Length: 204
Ligand code: IMP
Image (cartoon, rainbow, N blue to C red):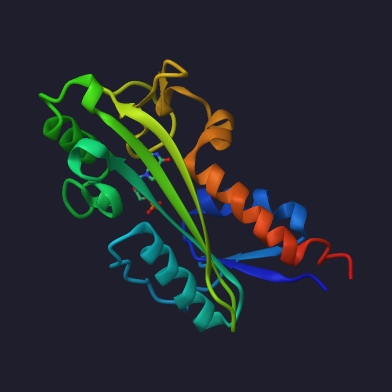
């Protein structure tokens, strides 16, 4: 019998990405697009862990099904970790990527390159009915550039410069991003955990 796992997201790109990643496990991935009765969940945690947990446990409780949820963002060391969990709304609520990037450039205007280190973090939470919630994390390190470069990706990608590649995250294609990104790393770790539980579940 094929088992189901819920992905606590309404983002079609993310849903597709997780469907592909989870395909080898033989799981049916149900997303919040398939469950319109589940209301929006308020992500008011102070950490990526807290927000991932809030989403995973709320949806697990509502559906009675094993649930995955992620939370991610940009951590700038000079800014004491900001924008962090506020990455999506750094400039203003609903401000969007262009305004967020403009604000980041402005608050770092006089900060020299050697103090512009940053990383993206992604946390994945896996909540199971009657079980404890488990987490995995992925990080990707870089430097905040002085001006945006590249058209790929989203969010802070045009300002996230990776010295070892000589490129911003927006200058690499999706295939490479999906190998090196914070989300890819957190997902690979989660797959190891899921694999131990679900491997071969479609065979029976
Ligand atoms: P969420 O986890 O999808 O809600 O992402 C929160 C915010 O973090 C996004 O709106 C982006 O601003 C930022 N972010 C997360 N991951 C990335 C990434 O891979 N590239 C650029 N920005 C990202």
